[in-house]
Length: 416
Image (cartoon, rainbow, N blue to C red; front, side):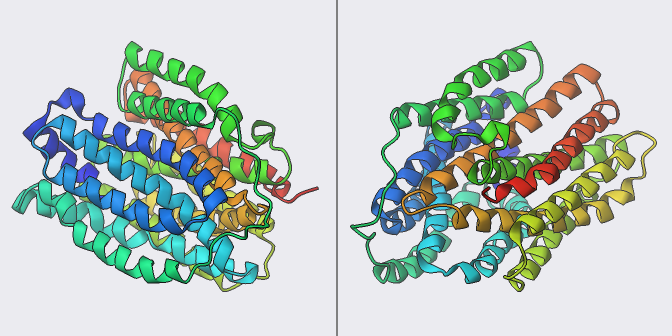
């Protein structure tokens, strides 16, 4: 959460502005690759080793990046961090499926959704303070004690976690999984890089990324995702739509308020804070109501997200009213808190033994892919139309349409 704040000082110290995007791209590529292979590992052998190994790998990456004197070592550290983060994200889903009864899962997913709020609020300002007063190196090294604490908490728990049932059905191996994982990693990373660039080269890279991604996604997604097939395919699609809409608006909201309306960067970050708090509050609320139908809650979440996103049409133009970003993004955050937790519940509910890792990794990739593609679309619109006041209303309209699409297909998250 804090790396973005430290990146300008980091690049000025050990790199060049032309390399600005690469630490983010390296992390993204490694996370996608680890998401796929980590999911398969968890399905076949259980989540015990990934739950310990992933934070250790992330911690080693922190040390490597924090002691870097040049860009190659920094990128190696970011790759290790991405491998740890991608594996951890899937292992947690498999753990929830293995340990918690279905009725308890809404509350668990409410806690998981809320767990990112404190880092989201504190990470950027603390990172900025550490970078200015000490060094960007300590943005990485200062987190190592937290990794040690996390591993210390997890090890006793996984010791009590039994091995996978030797008699359970395990999904058959999928051919070409490693190649598909590499293709997805390269494709998503290329889209992520292109989203931070402008011009013809970025457009060409984005086009090549899509060509590379297409065959990879056939292997990595459940059949029927792109036609909103009933059940798991639409659950995976919903994850992509939720994340793509919310995080793309999150990425462009500061530019909308600062570039178009002249707000300071500190003030322009306020909608992100209230959106995070709305997400946390709604996640906690749905966790206290385990008997509500999750497909209905997912539809309500999409509707709230659509309303919050559409409200930015009253903010993004030059004639817009900037303070409306605050109430509308609270509504969007509430929608994410309800919808994201409900989607996670449906994912586990419809995943058989030996499938949770595969389905969780597919949902994670849908999240990363849609977000990278939509942020890239925003960059292309800015390059084409020239100013945030001209480009961002078009992007917001597109994102609103995606949220409405999610509301329409949400009923298909339940099997026929």
